[in-house]
Image (cartoon, rainbow, N blue to C red; front, side, top):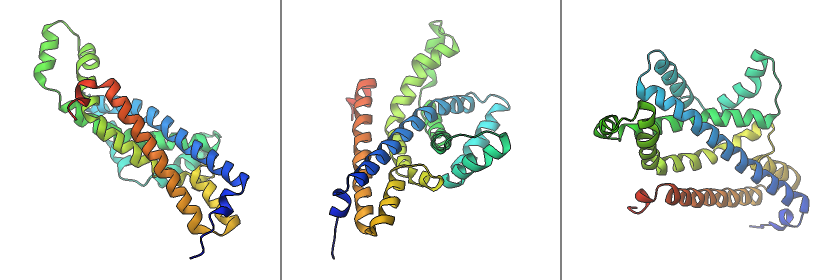
Length: 226
């Protein structure tokens, strides 16, 4: 097999495209993860507290997102919502919104499972000490739930990062989009996608290392037992 990776590496424009694409993919995933986590906390709390009416809305939202492909959600956000609501955003903003919504549904189920792991006796003890419901949740329930489910959240985050290549379908200049452009110019498909694979693996490992460091920093009492 005649492999010619040099056709990619010797071209400064191609290298810059890959670098910018990798940065875009990583940044959108990180921002989407943060926004999605915040939304997920609200969704999980609504379902955990079984707030009348709202819990059914939250459950329907979570089930809809978890049972439809990300690319369908992406197309709806990028092309459907602007028609319905009459607004115009750049494609990267549509991608960020779609990723945030997708992340939120998966994170919400993980967090809801985490809330259930906190023993009821701890809530009763907090009430006996005079803590209100919000204080109990913020100081006792949430830290334990997030800490216990952090490995699952991290794994889900990395998995979802690996699916973000489809945002290239709406014109976002991410890593996959850069690879498609280079492939169309060089016709070295194998070499291009092997390069993309190496970059995706590198970013995934970097995210895993960052998550592991955050876990040891924020939840040292749990990290010591792993």
